[in-house]
View 1 (tube, rainbow, N blue to C red):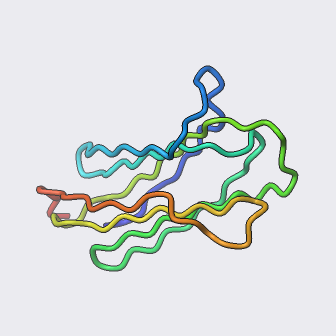
View 2: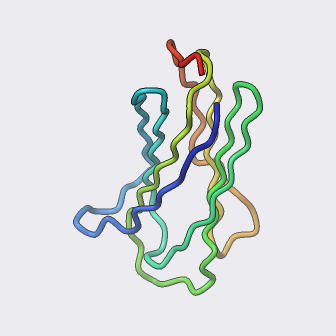
View 3: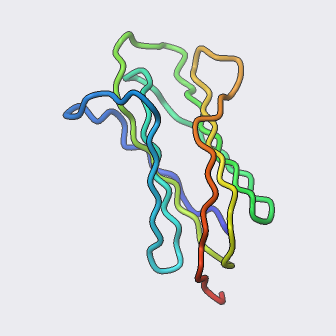
Length: 119
């Protein structure tokens, strides 16, 4: 598995905030697309990092904006990976708020990928 990209879509103003973090994933061609939706303050700015070790994927997202607004909204983020081999992947997503000293685990899931590219 190779990490390809990260996109932050920012506040989704037309939708209400959500009670719990939500995630979804899809496979398109040879890519795994992993979307995470969660609440945080409206002015959040994100920095991402990813660790991949065999079939374990750890995604870290940190809010780097120390000027925290009072407004809270739903944010959507997308992570894209290139699949190199089939198998069961342990995916973990961690978030660190701007006002926090540590990351918290928001999502942990086993993803079963049946087919993979031979590239």
